[in-house]
Image 1 (cartoon, rainbow, N blue to C red):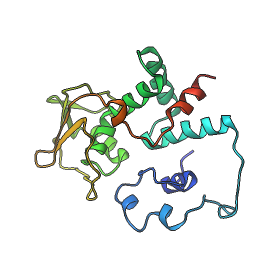
Image 2 (tube, rainbow, N blue to C red; image 1 turned 45 degrees about the horizontal axis):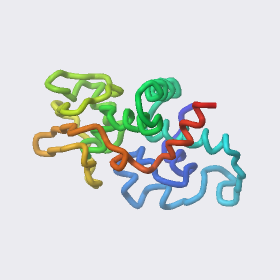
Image 3 (cartoon, one colour; image 1 turned 90 degrees about the horizontal axis):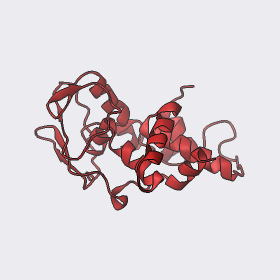
Image 4 (cartoon, rainbow, N blue to C red; image 1 turned 90 degrees about the vertical axis):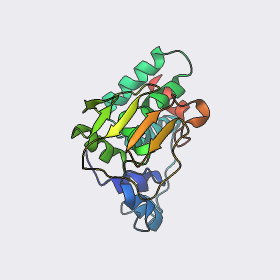
Length: 198
């Protein structure tokens, strides 16, 4: 079921940065209405179970990275097969998706716009045109924007240390896979692992 993305942020009680520039402006609904959407939003108080917390965190990951259920489940399966901490493996793969890299580097206003740029053929990976946003980049990969449809953020956050972005040439270099301390702290990885490990 599709709904306005700002309602997702209000339900979470925090910004998921799904709407590009609007998320950084005074028009952001999360800043203006700090309660969940719906008739009873301002007064509703719900006691949530442990399973509910796990489900909630999994749903947050889907919303933040713009994934379908089967996509996230597939990523989790791959994370389990890899050596190391499963939660870290999962977030590392999500961070290395091409659409997320464009967003993190500030060359796309949101992940959904980054996916649009990729699907329209405006991105080259190591000199070859790509149209699949879910491709996992590798260290030393180089991405370049080659089309006219560019949606950069005018409000920049700091580019992660594992990326090198050059706005003038519209290129991004993946220096290395993100380490534990370089991963975003917006998700509770353990809750997601617990959900899929039931």
